[in-house]
Image (cartoon, rainbow, N blue to C red):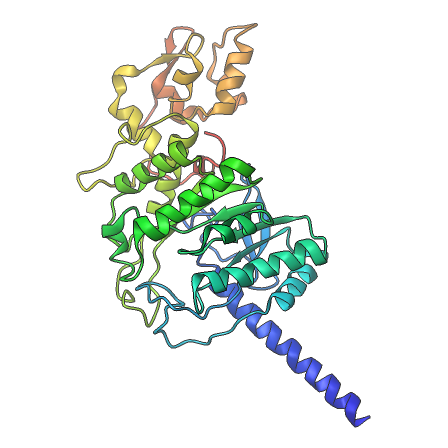
Length: 401
């Protein structure tokens, strides 16, 4: 009876310790963003635990991921990071087996649909990557888990570990954090932008080119902490999309963390993060180049209007566009007309002419934005008033508009 009591007590303490680690490492993993900008979703996601994180799907749907750090023990001292080596905070670590088991518990209860695994750098990049890799091996080989896995690759990891992790994951990523070495030096005195970060991301992209990861390759940039300009950021993103076939670049608005060197720096406005995502979609989906985007004298996007509208107002000589004659490439440059609505316009034009704004509205066009830039069967419909600055969730451009 005494032995049974000790066993039960030890088991209870083990579970408490596990949940303590889970809650702590789940909260800390939230600093890696996966696509919902604060300007649209300012309220904290309500979930069963800090481990459940709302990720953005390809069509804009919300997908709950089990998002966690393998450990928050870290050898680095990044100036903004909650896990920096010199910061006084609790330090914990998951063993690969216990993390795999905990994830499967959430997965079987249908609380989450996949895993997003990251880690601080403990001992060395290779040592920490090995532990994440072992967690993936247990899931894939011991438990035959076939669902979604996004795994971070740590800066400085050997090529062999990148390839081994890539064979078990659906998506790989490495955070660049800044657009160049000058800006990175404002965030970290230790990291080398070209040798560690950019070259590492290129190795991941090279693996993707040979093995075609289902979820592709992504990266993340911290915005608003290193005096970087939006033009610098978007020029880098454009090069990564064109030269290395990245699936996404994520933008994380800087938030100061207590007991870090940047704790007194002002937080980045969520609206700036939002405008970067809009401009990013123009680069990826609408054939814009960074040179076409309109920036202010500091090299930043204008906050009071979305980038597509700013471009149109600065190129007013290209408008109005006749809806019944315009090419697809011309239609998608019109504010309020996205790729889906442009295709619907082309399709319906095969059989009939569009003559009324209501027809466009039914096809998905945001008429209040488009009317200033179009004619319908030769007729112009000027806007009744200037467009007010606004945040429209549809304009986040998950895949369209």
